[in-house]
Length: 272
Figure 1 (cartoon, rainbow, N blue to C red):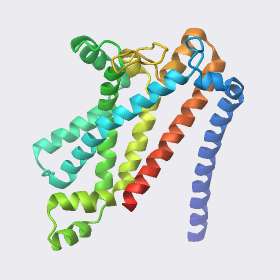
Figure 2 (figure 1 turned 60 degrees about the horizontal axis):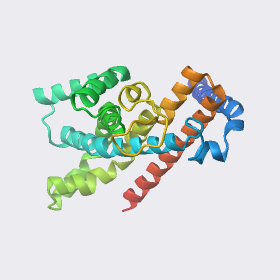
Figure 3 (figure 1 turned 180 degrees about the vertical axis):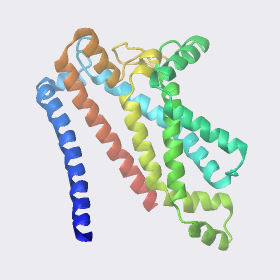
Figure 4 (figure 1 turned 120 degrees about the vertical axis):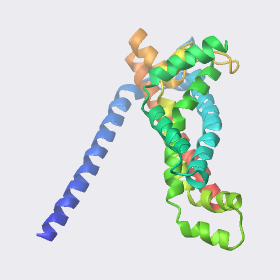
């Protein structure tokens, strides 16, 4: 009977993995079949093509938004996780309030973030529709992801590591920087990768803050579209599904490249 239950568990496990793989392959195949014929060098890299007929401006804007958002949100998120796990009194009212705030932020729809970004950055601060307004808005959105995942990674570091470091005479800050954070780098890297996926796929918040202008940005206060926003506008406004499918393929390729880059940097940091 026990063997039968074990076999049944294995069947359920492999069935779940198989269904997940089939769904992923089906989605990828659908987009590649419908969009691959529309991908050309001119469509990807041309700067002389008419507006909306080259993805070069959108690729540049997407990379700028991802890079600046991670530059802002990652230090704040990791620092907050370190404070909550290593310094804060876990039973204090302040910590409970912070955790409630983080949980609330993680559950707010992206359109609400977009409305906040539009009212605060675009209207009150006078940044107009700009990349910078979009970056700061999306930075708030990904903070809960980075904080929660980083805190779980810090919790997974054995307490004996801290005790051994303290026993050798190291201080709290040195122990965190040289022992705990390197040991938790894999989990922190997973948080960054999840954040990249959220940033690259965001549309509602960026439409309201960065705008939908199609063109190469000439500065952080310029309005421009990311790949996801461009795909949305092409689908809704012109119904050009060929370009939409091709944009989806490029978007997935950008996500994969960013994930590989994050993994590469993480491995280098871990070895160092």
